[in-house]
Image 1 (cartoon, one colour):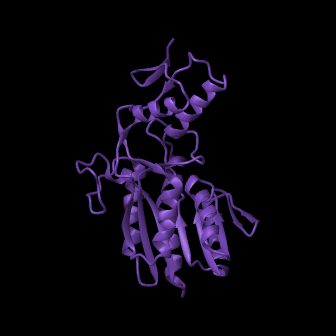
Image 2 (cartoon, one colour; image 1 turned 30 degrees about the vertical axis):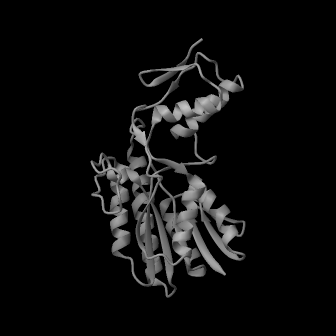
Image 3 (tube, one colour; image 1 turned 90 degrees about the vertical axis):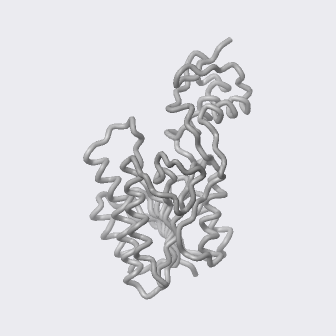
Length: 276
């Protein structure tokens, strides 16, 4: 029976991974790691601090040595959100310290393990190359992307025949599990609210950088690709997962308006307004 760890099991990709894995394995033991607990066979093991987290992780790993690890856990705060010392510590622990620590645990065991780390297209920053590829120069701008690059380098440096590391550089990918702070969910929730009279027509929709371009795909397909990377004996290394097509934020919004039959919206600056 395969033992598979999913870090970030409560997020979009973690939830999708859990669901898809059941279609690939008849028997699998999932060690699900959330932001405040481990769940193994419906047994809940909570933790409150990073120290408790590491102690519990050591305890569990001694008993359930992983065959495959999916690392989706990430802490990312938008540029307009206030950065505090506590937030910065949380980001460093989740985005860098924990995945590197987990890989070291794997290297100390006798079992062969495959380690899949979800990175982000933000590592390229304002790259002049379009489209980017696996060898495009990293140009991280924000703290989150800098930590991603640092972690990528550490994991790849530690990749061996015993512990094979796969870096998946993910471009925007969306699903029903996307949280409300993401702009795609924000647009959809806005349209749903208008159609169901939850939101008044005079309430505007604000989007940051409506002219910025994004490469957006369907999250279940992206997670399925990551699963297949390890199941199909693909060589370890770095892989970009994207559609290769760009769409502006405002055009995405217009497409959603069309789906909801909302055709009386105008853009003024960063806000969409309804008109009659």
